[in-house]
Amino acid sequence: MAETVPSEHLVEWAKTDNRRFLHAVYRVGNLDKTIKFYTECLGMQLLRKRDIPEENYSNAFLGFGPEETHFVLELTYNYGKDSYDIGSGFGHFAIATEDDPDDYTFELIQRGPTPEPLCQVMLRVTDLDRAINFYEKALGMKLLRKKDNKKYKVNVLLFIIAAVLCVHYSDDGVMHDEMESTVLELTYNYGVTEYTKGDAYAQIAISTDDVYKSAEVVNLAIQELGGKITRQPGPIPGINTKITSFLDPDGWKIAQHCNILIASKAAYSRVKLIDFLLNILASKHLVEVLVDNQDFLKELHKEE
Image 1 (tube, helix red, strand yellow):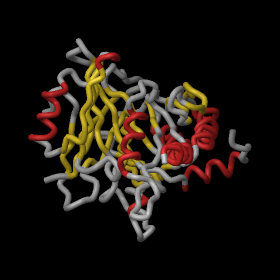
Image 2: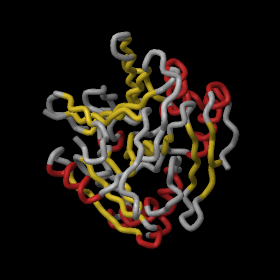
Image 3: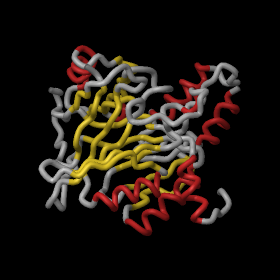
């Protein structure tokens, strides 16, 4: 286990940890129909699809580019279940581009060419200031802007500093703004004190370099602002990748997975990298997790 680090150092570390948005997971009632809609109507690419009959589900990953460099969607179909309750808390996804069969809302944003077309996830919260504070402290996010419009809503965009669109693939070292990256939008509706979660939307996945430090940072935020760690950091049986899991104060699930470190001089073959990643993603335990990047690299070394 990692050595104890002063809390103030942990909070600062979270702001510089190597992170980016990886994918959002949600459940659909007709996987093929949804894939057809997203690919033909929204222009997404089907990145991969698999059927897990022994666990009674199938899933598919779709996006506007490869998972190594883009935020993507993971759609899950559970055998025999053809509809879900989205609830009143989940807001929408936003696509930066000039009727979804499962009733998920997509917001089309008129915007010029962008490296991250799947650019936004909106969730509703019951205490906006608390939510902002939690995401800044627990995940090292940065508040980009806040708009107060009593006629409509209060909207807040939060962005992960070190996860600005693939740190590993950029040479300039400059943090990109929301015009070039995926962001989280938190919305507070005046007078609303509770939202339903339903059973459709699952989580957002975010990467980390150190699962133990991440868990400590999250725990500090939870002690102050609420939330719950649902799994202490430790290895996944059979995979030996360390994870931890937690809920934010509003009960939204946040996942963190290992970074995909790919460079021209990398010592790891792409095939081994993909095979290892598929083994991780095949685990049913990976709901709202933090995965340690160093352990990921060690596993790759073992396979060499």
